[in-house]
Amino acid sequence: KGVSLPSTPRRSGSYRSSRRSTLRQQRNSNDLPHNSPIAPDVEGQGEGSTQQNDGTLDDDAVTDAGDNADGTLGNATTTEEASIGTKQTEKKGLSELKIRTLSSVVTLAGIVALIKFTPDDTGLKGLIVLCQILLYTEVTSALGITGGLWALLTHMQSSLLPFFLKGREQVFRLITFGMIADHICVMVMSSRANLGAALYNFAGSHVAALATVKASSYWFSTMAVFGSIWVIYPALLVILNDTVAYLFGKLFGKHPIFPTISPNKTWEGFLSAAVATIAASGILGNKLVSPEIRVLNYYLVGAYVSFVAPFGGFLGSMVKRHAGIKDFGKIIPGHGGMVDRLDCQLMTAPFVYLYLDAVANTP
Image 1: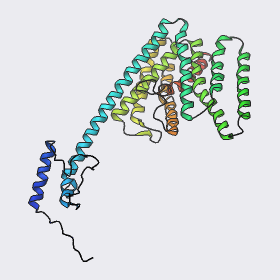
Image 2 (image 1 turned 90 degrees about the horizontal axis):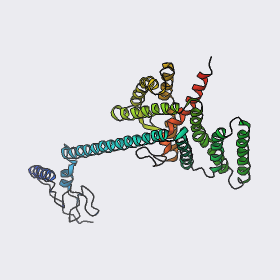
Image 3 (image 1 turned 90 degrees about the vertical axis):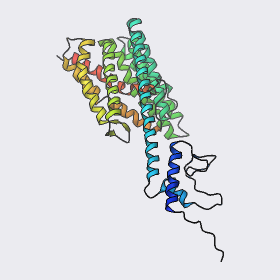
Image 4 (image 1 turned 180 degrees about the horizontal axis):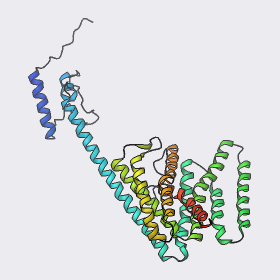
């Protein structure tokens, strides 16, 4: 008390103007002094440090660092950083697009090879079985479901046994019911410690199996009745729809469809993909399937792929948001897991078989 502290003298306006000019020149030449207020962080010193050697706060340094009245230097720094961030984002987007494209081409080439070089579509059928296991595993892992192996076996045998027990549907139906009943008994007997967890694991495992194994089992039915081409043709439409939606969403997307579920999927990409898919459905159908089928049937399949199948992707996004994960897995570079790649395909497979069966049996 009674002791006055020495005040820091204010510098003249010409000195401050000269100081700012010198700092800008040093910044442009990347030759900033170590103790400059806008020098990069060194050993824990924050950017824009304004502490002098004697412990006092240099007001001029605060002004020189970019907090000056006109904000010229600060705005320049912000603009430069934003420009660098935009370029990095663009490079990352192009890199992801290249990886997605390459992995898609390799996947399609592998599927074509399986179909061409294996008899009676055995390679494609084996691939579907592998996909079923991976799909179910990814979903149950994301939702934290445990003890779901029995549900997987129950629904897999229900989709495979009909091909080995033709004409004896009653047998595999009895087996399926017996396995479900057994699962219920085991669940009840093991639920003493935690009733909620037991019910969650039981219900979740069977719902996951229905959404993945049961849905994909329609590919087997389609191949058996209508041929493998009716598995390939809709799958190509889904791939086309997904690709166009991704590209146009990246280039022109500004209006998200469901911001809280999937902010990267936009109306611009969704509608552009619908136009491209429906337009291509008739052309691909005549070329790949048969020109004798009414083109309206191809357009209806294309419309379903465009407006309904994408909701399989939205459902997958809901699961990922709930689980707090970015992708279901990393098995497919650029795409993520098997669910990330086949979510819309799983919405399409049952429709194609049911629609063809209804049309074929319509007088």
